[in-house]
Length: 386
Ligand code: GTP
Image 1 (cartoon, rainbow, N blue to C red):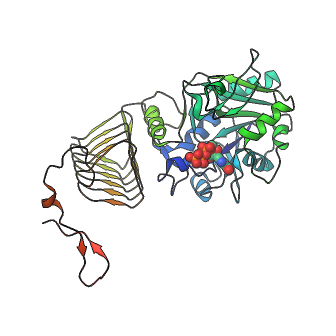
Image 2: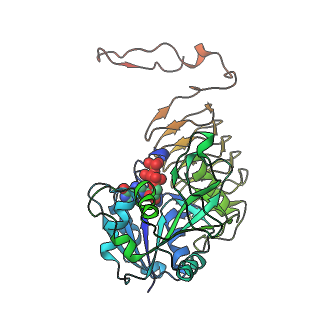
Image 3: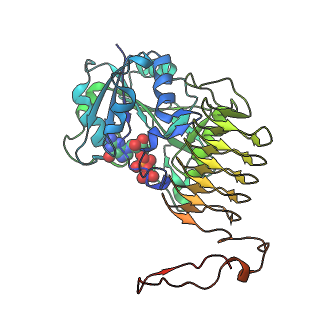
């Protein structure tokens, strides 16, 4: 038996409002919940039993995967009443492990898309007799990550979380969120309290002279924690820039899932995904984006590097650039949104509310002043178009 713990309990605050109703690991990435890619990858590497460490919206995980048979895995769920942090979650989930004290246990963050060779990492761990082996990734700008310098033999020499000053940036190697622990090491993490594996467990292991090793991996790697990374990861999977055993079709420029409707005169590109029940109308251009279940993109709309939530609507001629549209939101006709805008779930943005270019018609013909509604003192509603 080969076991793994997957950390899937975080709130995914950086991805709000996409994570308001769906936990980050269950957001659709290249047509399936992101976690499906990770579970399929673990199964392909010989993992047979997975403990999912859940907390935020915990009940949705079991509803999605049940006992795991569909993926050829035995799945167990361990839910924290209040989030225990990464280390606390690993310790808590270990109650369900069946591995012997000297067995290797794979631990994965539930938001990393990577091409790492899991079986090779585990083999390296066994070969070196390490207590913990971390996958490391080289990045150009490591400031948002945990730095993990190693010596020539691959032993980790320090852990530095999110360095800010140039003196602190002593390596370009970062913690890639994929570890192999010798099981007995997990059992030494303090139980029933919040623990950060990055800030507490790993530094303490170094202080006690434990053997902590890093393996630099140069395959694809992306932390899907931000909206830009989320849409990019999905597009990269669709285009085959990173592979997954769970991809629901061959790589290509776009993935249109069964039950979606795309007008022949619409243009899809850049690894766009159109989910079941979504509609893309005539003349719409959708590039490098995720269009979720039941969403509607109206004629002539332009959607670039954006995520359009479930049953959200994008009006005629509206253009979105690196935008997140929450579930059920409606961005009506003629809006032009600059990069980085997030529309709340269920919100409605009136026609021509936000423009980067001049509105095609003068203001006075679009809206008259807001005035009180008759019979409802103190409330106001927009007047109808003149
Ligand atoms: P942000 O709020 O946007 O930072 O996202 P996050 O909540 O997912 O936090 P982060 O990206 O740092 O978490 C890395 C991984 O650990 C993710 O897969 C999380 O689901 C998971 N994780 C973080 N905190 C906890 C926790 O307290 N319990 C469990 N079970 N998992 C956690």
